[in-house]
Length: 176
Ligand code: HEC
Image 1: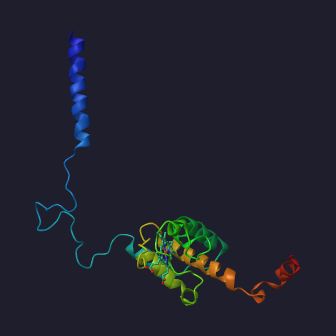
Image 2: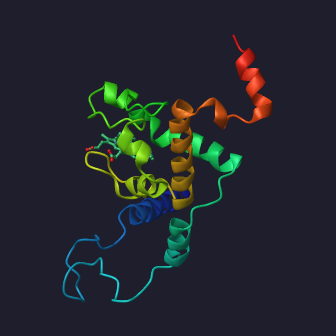
Image 3: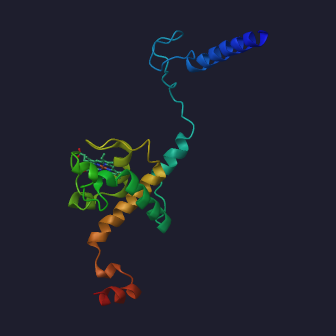
């Protein structure tokens, strides 16, 4: 009998424990602060700098050297984050556009051919018109990598034979 009581007591205790974990006392970010004027989520004090902000700023303003690794990374990230709308070739006919998203300007348009890398970096950071910002999903170094890959996509349709290294040229010329 005493064993039954013990089990009943344990069950009650454990149940209560579980409930405490589920419903913890906490503030909602935007609810009224009991101590300060305004909401619980405070504005950072003037002239404070967030941890990592300087490092991020440095990466954001320094274009990394163009390497095969950077391009490969850009290609991978472009495939994940951009091609659903911009299409694998950058024409702006990705699957989401085929399902109703407004069609973006092709990367092969004269205006975007003339844009610099910084412009692509900034569009990823801030969004553009109907396109939302990718700042939270694509870190600064990857933005440079994607910009570099977009340049490669553009070049793929505007390169001339003179851009091909001489030792590779013969291969192209003999291709069927
Ligand atoms: C959900 C769909 C979508 C995704 C994903 C997307 N974009 Fe866009 N993007 C658009 C649309 C739509 C526009 C045109 C917006 C407008 O003009 O209102 C656009 C415009 C652009 C432009 C051209 C801006 C101009 O001057 O016309 C660039 C550059 C661009 N996107 C780059 C990117 C890159 C890089 C990525 C990946 C990190 C990306 N986009 C991901 C939908 C998308």
